[in-house]
Length: 433
Image 1: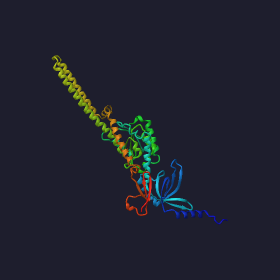
Image 2: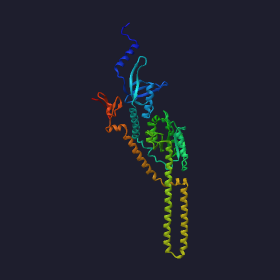
Image 3: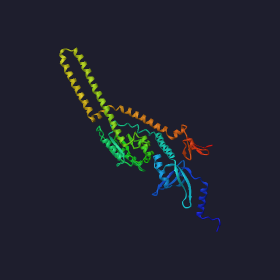
Image 4: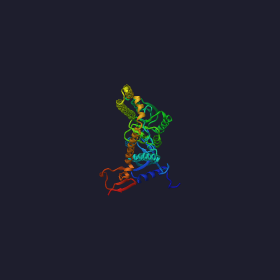
C-alpha cells in the first residue's frame, strides 16, 4: 500500500489547519441572501450567493450560519435599521468568520452586519423602478387623473378583517356633515409574499366595474414595517400608475414613502386620514356651493333693481293710461324676485341640491386645483431624488469606512489603520500614517 495515502478525515483536517493558519479572524463580505432558515433552537442557516453582472447565473455560493446568540440581536437590529425583515432576496454586507469542518465542509459564521449597505441597495432598487416608469412615460399618469368633485362611490382595497378598514368605514359613515358615501370592499392580502399579486387582482376586479366608482382607496392599518417592501415592486407600481381612476393610499406608515405611494394620485398616512380626505373633499364642494348661491341671490337682486329703475324711467314718459301696466309689471318683477330668492335659499339648505348644483357650475375650478397639487407632488418627488445616496455621492460627498463601519470622528482612527473612502464612482483605500 502507498505510504502517502490519506484518509478523507486526514485530508479535511489538513484543509482545516491550512485555512485556520492562513485566513484572518474575519472578513466583510458582500453577497445576496438566497435562503434564510431560522430554526426552533434560535439558530439561522443561510445561503449566500453572488450572481453574474448580466443574468441570474451564480458565480459563487457559500453556506452560512448565524448562531442563536448572534441572531437574537442581529435580526431585530437589521429590521429596525432598514425597515425590512432579514429575508431571502436582500443584498447584505456581513462580517464573517471562515470555518471548515471535517464533516460539514466550508461555512461562513456571521458575526455582524452593516444595514446601511442594504439600505443603499433598497434605495437603488426603488430609484430603478421609478426611473423605468418615467422612461416608459407612466410615472405620473395616475397623478394626472382628475380627482372627482364628489368622490362618494369608493372602491376599497384592504384586508377584510383589518382594523384600519373598520376605522375607514366608521369615519365615512359617522362624518358630522352627514354626507353619504358608498364604499365597496375588494379584499386583498396586505402583507407577505402574496401582497403584490393580491392587490393587482383587486385592481383588475375594480377595473371590471369601473363605471360604478369615483375613486380607489388602498389601505393597510398597522402591520410590520418590514412588510412595506411588498409595496416597492415594479408590477404593482405600473398597475397603479396606469389605473384610470384616481388612487388614494393610506398604508399606515410615516417614515418613508413606498413606490406605491409615489405613483398614486394622493398619499395619506393612515386609513382614517384617507376617510378624512374624502370628507374634506365634499366639505370644499359644499363651501363653494354656498358661495355660489350667495352670489346668485345677489346678482338676481341687482338685476331686478336695475330693471325696476329702467321701468320707472320709461313710465315717466308714458301717458297715465300706461300707469296700471307699469304697476302690473312691477308686481310681476316682485313675484319673480321672491320666487328666485326662495329657490336659492332652498338650494342652500338641501345638501343634495347643493352638490348637484356644484357639479354644473364649478367644474372649471377642478383643473386648477389638480394642477396645483400635481406641482406640489412633483416638488416632493424631486426632493426625494435629490437626497438619494447616489445623488449625495455625486455632489462630492464621500463615506470613510474602517472595518466596514463609517468613521465620523478623527479619534476613531489610529496609525496603521486601513481606511476605505467610498466615492460616487468607486472606492479609495488608504493607510493612516
